Image (tube, rainbow, N blue to C red; front, top):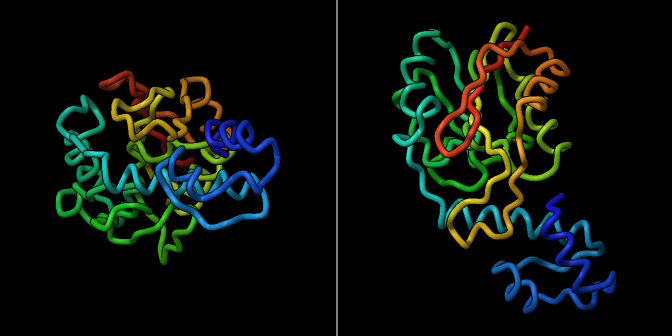
Length: 218
C-alpha cells in the first residue's frame, strides 16, 4: 500500500468516505478514480492511476546514463545466449531488437510487447534471463517480495535476474510527488536472495545512488 497516499486520504477523511470526492482527488493527486467502499481500495486505485500517469506521460528513459545497468547489459545478456528474456517494466522497450529473444512487459507504456504488470502477466514459458531495471521499486516490502517471487517462479533453473533498484530517493519531476519509492538496501537484497533460493553474483553502486545486482537461481 502507498503510505503517502494512505496518510493523505486518512488525514482528509478521518474515515468518512463521503469526504473523498472526485474533485478533491483530482485536486490533490491529479487523477480521477471511481467510488470505492474502503480507504484501502481508494489507496490502491489512486496509486495505480498516479503510476500510470507519471510513467506514461512524464517519465523519460536515459539508458546511456547508467554505469552498469544500461546499454552495457546488451552484450552481457547476449553472451549468455538466452533462449528467452523477459524485461519487466520495460518502459519504451529499448532493449527490443538489441537483446536476443526479448519480450518486454509494462503496465503503463504502449511500447511494451504486453501492456501488463508482472503480477498479472501469464507467460507461456519460462525465461533464462529476467531484467528488472528500476521497475520492481514501488510500494510496500510485501509488494516487492511478491513481484520478485513471481519472477523467480517463471525463471528457469540456473537462470539470471539483473536488477537496478532505488534506495528510496524521489525523482526530480514534481509529478512523481505521490509515487511511493521502496527503499532498497544491501541487507534486503541478500535476505531476499536467501528466501527465494538465489545466489547473489554481483552488487555494485550504479549511477544516481542506485544499486545494480545480479541473482542466479539455484
